[in-house]
Length: 149
Ligand SMILES: [Zn+2]
Image (cartoon, rainbow, N blue to C red; front, side, top):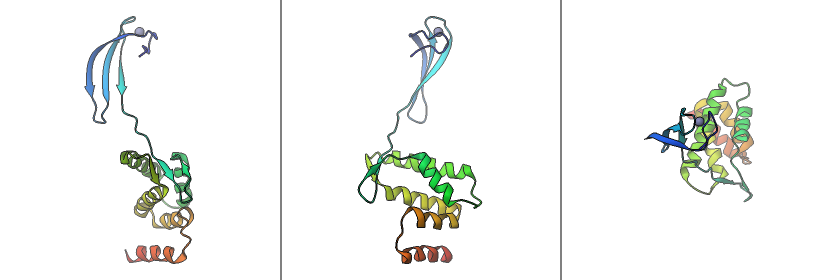
């Protein structure tokens, strides 16, 4: 670990604490300039690959998912912060599955569940465009459920 002040490699650990995300925080003192700084080690969780309906795989793309949800929420009273929060929740749920691959449908289902709470119009738009609900009957049933609920 390089000292952020003088770039010297070599420091003394003053103390070590654990944070509540499984990380380890170390307070250090540079051997050269004696400035103090902290380092944080955290596990990096991998996001599983998404398996699409046609069997091809793609990386989880936070930007792309955000764009898709934004389009569904166009001119609807959904704050951008809520969309970011939803995307963040989806990403961490995927990581916590601890799997190498998951069906892309899982992501769609999580978006649907989130949008259903945020805005029902956005929810129906997402269902039609992104889940390729090519069966009109299925879309109608979804809308009927919403009207009943
Ligand atoms: Zn230093």
